[in-house]
Image (cartoon, rainbow, N blue to C red; front, side, top):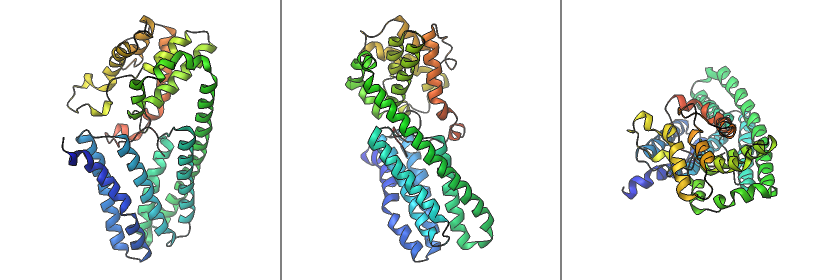
Length: 341
């Protein structure tokens, strides 16, 4: 693959960040037609870079992070312009800035960034509100529709602040408890210290959550529940970490893959085989079975133990937000990585 193909999506994303001063300049100088055209062009590049990244199989954590930053910078720059048209946009700008600062702080403290459904809905609504704000410059009659969208946007921004704050304390406590729980760390130390396992920090999983972040939460939840109900918590801790230990990021698989060979159907078996390859001393028949069956009922393999059922349920619960994501049902996938705002 040529360097151009590999880097073009990220170049397009960076161009959206670089062009931000032009957005502000055009808005403050009331060159609204040029501003509107430029905004449409940026929106086009936003769609194009994601499409090219998926088509050329060059989806990357760096690209995902740049894409998130570009979206946030674009929204804030357009809000600056709209504040001079309608002072109520100042509230949206302040709330959006607080959300951005909160996400930066949360990542700095916990090294975990999550893409939440409420955050994605808020992003779509805020861009619709911005679009209506720009259109109002040319069509003053849409004032009522704009007011409704502004109110809805503020509501979702407040919900985001509450949700991100809640998740910060949840992740902080999870990290704190993990450090204190020496028994859990002793059980999984060999896995957590493995360079091969650490690569999963760079494997994107559920819309801006890495495989590493996902399996760590599933493993620790399974461990604590298993210990409370006197199950085989050691097997739960190990299987929880290795249940998505498939060898390559699922996004690199070609679209031409037969339906029943796609990631959802095969990765449980791939994870078991890979776990037996890298951690044979930790594997046994029960753990292997737990990994192999965790995708039930998508896979017909029926869980064979209480621990296997628990892993299956905890994994589903942790993935529920991803499964509810509206983009999943439209076929439009925007590449993003472990850790968003």
